[in-house]
Length: 86
Ligand SMILES: [Zn+2]
Image (cartoon, rainbow, N blue to C red; front, side, top):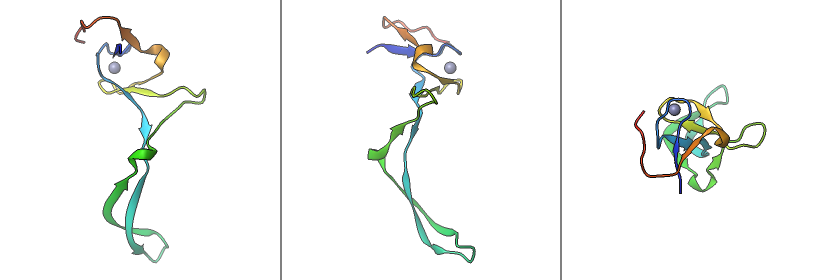
């Protein structure tokens, strides 16, 4: 495994995959406008977690340090264990 570094802010080990995780939001019933009244819990469907992709099919990554979206080709892969601090 090669560690990753953000090309925008230079931080290492801050790259995350942008995923969508569906959930089942519990409802107690519906109001007069036919909208659900939530009861305050959501069952997260972890097995249906899926990576988000751009219009070209590339997985979207996000740097959790600078919040910039990245594509794999932009991410700097580190060959050794020495990581510069941003
Ligand atoms: Zn960054």
